[in-house]
Length: 449
Image (cartoon, rainbow, N blue to C red; front, side):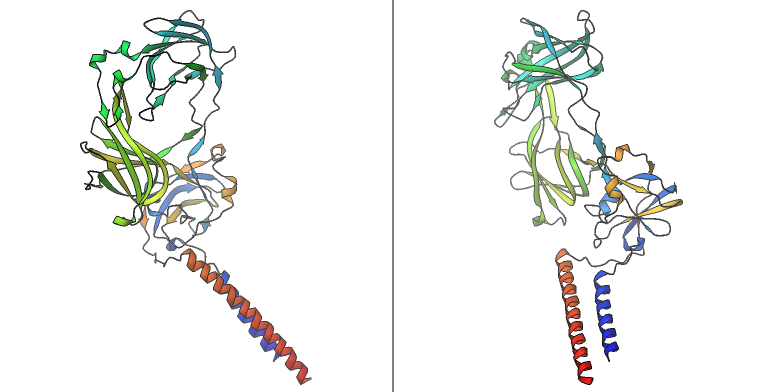
């Protein structure tokens, strides 16, 4: 009797543990889509694989449903890393002002680098003033006597009207120690009577709206590169098939089905001059009341003091959503003619070590039930060091639909939690009943003896 009771308790406990912890290995048949990774693939080699827009469209937003399989259908660990890395170290040098000349035609500043320097390609002027525009002619010299013309451009600030400021002079990297900056007032370079007078609401972008004045330059520095601290590779996708309509407030409303992430959205606009505020919304169903606000921004194209300034994009980073909506506020202006919309995102690459020699591997995705994997590889090949690794690149075939895939009902977090709690309760009850039966068996044995 005692042995039978113990066997019964053991079976109950074993069944409870199996129901709570059993994990069935995934296979390609658990995913809706697959691509082949064409080899040959060599054992113990690190490979890089670009995740194309077709893969991103059909996987989940975090790419957590992607799995890599060998030819014998064994799961291969991987890591997904964005294609960005630190740029070269930028050296900054103070430029000493050795001469300043002020006349009616232009202000001329002669500058000198320190004795020890590397060739520079950027000069940055620290200017305290707002609302100015100056034409610039930059010269370079090795001895401070013979001068070579390097570049002609402009510096400006329109920050009282729009967020637009430029105080850097960029040029081809050159090994000059001496530099000469010639600052020319806009009105002396352009006939004010021929300037374009452009107004948009309370904004005035006319040339003759800018006052001539001496600039307060706090310091001037030379740099071996731009201030960007990362080198980034982007992927992009263009769309011409989107719905466009006008609402009751004369706003342009665009609905774009994309199913892609982005860091920037570009609009190909035919209109020569415009300044419009834009609301950016997202939805995963596309239904009218399902859109939620992501960001507000502006796009514009207009002449500013002889310079054609254009910002035809929205800079904002978001994970993948199925639908995007843009609400462009036209007010009383003509509608914008939008020919094309382009999404741009930081390129995503998948890295893996081959576990054997093979002709091909399979990359599968499209499963709304599985969770993101946790591999050891993700700990030692990361965003901070991938660019220091030696790897080979591989390409994928076209996405194909898996005919053996059987959809499974998604389990949300609440359901998982409830199942976990229920399993824990069952285990506790089994242990309690087992302990009670054990006590009962001992008591019965004592009475029998």
